[in-house]
Length: 479
Image (tube, one colour):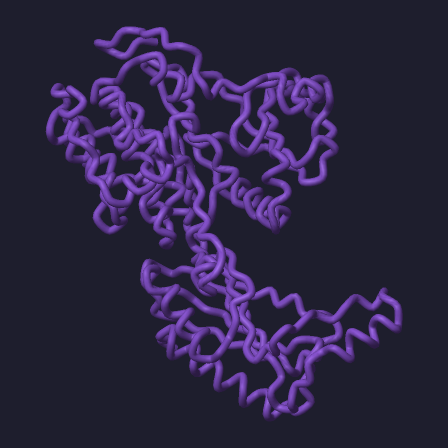
């Protein structure tokens, strides 16, 4: 395939070429994953997984891809929970321009595995290695199907978080039926569930960001809330690269690179000697690279339409998937999983549900204000869930399992702090689900800890109601 007006180049071997003999991948060849996919050969390795070509042992024998998750991912806290969540997201999200999910196993002898559609084509990274850059019209042919895939993800409240050329497979490159499929949605995330990082609420620990540094959005680096407009920034970086053969920021030092995403404007195309790209095209790309989400196009359809007008093509209509009907949006049911141990008495568990005015950029400040005002402590935060405790004694250690000896259990009980009656700690669990950029539904539950069970229901309920009133005030509850 040769895009119009371009010639091949023969670069040296890429430093990212995987070592096929590393990590024990050769030992897997010939084995069977999930009891029904025979591993044929090693295809490559990414940051999260080793990738193999496999064949089903029963008809049809259509080749598939088996992705074995790497140990450094499987050993992270709550990996099993996140793996289950991502499998559910892939099962529910299907689109002609997204690689198809087939199967998964968390406990396979080979390790946690995903089974995906096998695609024959070239990644955009390979094409960018082969060619210096692409003309604007050719870029539009790639952007159209990419925007259709990501618009569907945005509608489903799913954000990819790691868009880059290596994750975009070009099928039939250079042919009239050329199209694209987005890969690696397997570690995407739901944007319908607000995620306030625990370090933001406690002032301790590390703010975690994911993504590839060259393509990561400024808000992810800042630790702000991230939605699909962060993916739109990544597409802006890819467009810039395809049109100029350069990344917007090319610092070798990662800290300087990340700082540039947040603070520096992208260099004009002319600074790279690129003067044959229409000004309107460059303007569309720079809009996608705005530092704040509200300054960018607000959807991938908008981006496609802006770019299409710049090149005089309706790339959105021309790249629409044939015979594809988007699924009707479904309201997600908000559930609060209390995980109440059998020793707790249900009569001491109270809950409330309300809608709150909580714009993403103020969510952390609002919850931290509640925590500070009530003397609470944030103990857990993950997408859609925050858990805090009020009135915890200093140097508290959870009750030891009953399997320990009676003497050790007695010593542990003797060391447990004494809490005055009517001042028992309260655990508050908030389940959050986004309605739009400014509103969330909140299901809040108040429960005791098994080490400090209250015995006065009336006093306990009054304390919970006081805390709930304070919480509703901080979160600007509207009902």
